[in-house]
Amino acid sequence: MGGLTGAPVGGLVAGRSAIVTGAGQGIGLEIARLLHEHGARVTLADVDAERAAKAAAEIAGGDAGSVLGLGCDVTDEMSVENAVRHTAERFGTLDILVNNAGITRDASLRRMSAADFDAVIGVHLKGTWLGLRAASAVMREAGRGSIVNISSLSGKSGNPGQTNYSAAKAGIVGLTKAAAKELAHRGVRVNAVQPGLIRTAMTEAMPPEVFAAREADIPMKRAGQPREVAGAVLFLASDLSSYMTGAVLEVGGGRLM
Ligand code: NAP
Image (cartoon, rainbow, N blue to C red; front, side, top):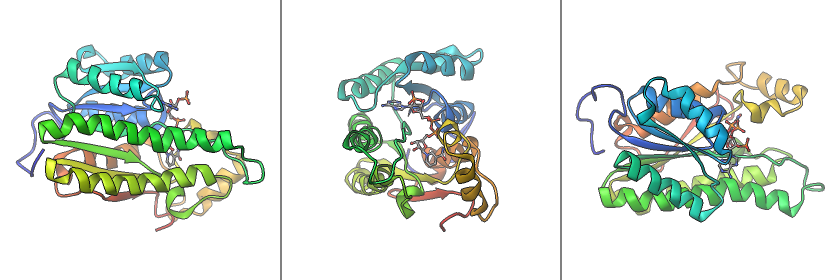
């Protein structure tokens, strides 16, 4: 994946193979769709295997051979390694990993249980680390690869009621930079994206007045769409960003700049 060597025929990631975690719906599904539209073979990995298979069939169209839906729990070491092995065997390589899977367990410090803290840290931070470790083992041998970790503006600013989530998302930034330094000389780039307020099932769960207040705070005066996050991920996954590693791109309509 070294250097800008001219426009790839068939899309920005033509001939590449990718895994997107948490791709059964929301931002992950749109990332998988956009990577596929740009020529990648894609594994949609989600804790809900049925949802992953359905999402894979939806984006495949008539091209079922280039899309795989897989049950994968990112908190489970074996499950993550299995997804990486399965993808590399099925598609011949693994060039792109997007660590996107996520959950929220919001509560004030007074009400948050240790189990809520562990669950959120487990999916976001440990899950991202497990994916990074498994995928980079394959990529470093190939001498190329791009890993994109989905953080959040909550990790930059901290959100009340999200001490677990904000800590995990800030942790993903440190993890991204440390891994980027370890892997740069092996041709593997590691970057992060920090979305702001995006319309998905995760934010639909917010009380409408909280959503409206957050939206009013955004300079662009609207929440973002999942595809607008996917665009930044595609850029980082492709050779258009060949000289970028350890970077954090904000996709928040100007919020918290
Ligand atoms: P979403 O619609 O809830 O999708 C997340 C997907 O991840 C779901 O299919 C979920 O399955 C799956 N998942 C949960 N735990 C998993 C696990 N252990 N292993 C594998 N998959 C798992 O959320 P989203 O809004 O698209 O969020 C995607 C990512 O963007 C997350 O990392 C989130 O923190 C981040 N983000 C979102 C926003 C936003 O405003 N929406 C803003 C900043 C950052 P279940 O539904 O079964 O749990």
